[in-house]
Amino acid sequence: MIKKLNEIKNFYKNNNFYLFYGKNDGAKKEEIENIILVNKNKSISKYDEKYILTNSENFLTDIYSGSLFENEKIIVINYATDKILKIIEEIINKKDLNISIIVEASSLEKKSKIRNFFEKNKKLICVAFYPDNQEILLKIAHNFLREKKIVLSQSNINLIVNRSNGDRVLLKNELQKIEFYSKKNKITTETVLKLTNLAENFSMNELVDNCLAK
Image (cartoon, rainbow, N blue to C red; front, side, top):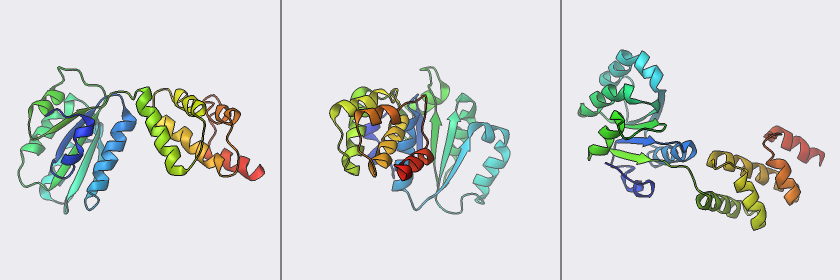
């Protein structure tokens, strides 16, 4: 069944099968981590579709024999396409398997078989992850700065958000640079421009050296 991102938290423990698709890789990664955190008593295994398709017999044998899943386990399958649908169907149709599966995919067209399979089955959860808009990115930035007790002007916050190119992963990386640099230095607009200069792409090691050298 189709669910919006803000609707699925209530399903973290009750639902065993998810399809997360779309171009917002950062949001997908966050949601997968949230599910893992809520189910921290379960062990985690991550696979790429390519690996499973190449080793499908061994993969399924391990599942059904219990050698891979002695305890409750979460399986994360990345880079999924319609090619893996038959394997997913087979696993879902098996009863008494103590596992949860999160299938992560990029953009899927409306005619996608795996998308339709998850959308039409009421026991499954299907969530589309759309690109973050300016409002969402600003909220992420404000929450981060509030948590870290870093004071920045709204113009500097806007500057950081604009330089993240609509990518929350990149935004958080830039905010972490600001956080680290602010421990020893005053943050100015010039600093923000310098730290978030994608052409220079400062690493954390460079920031450490800079802070030590003042």
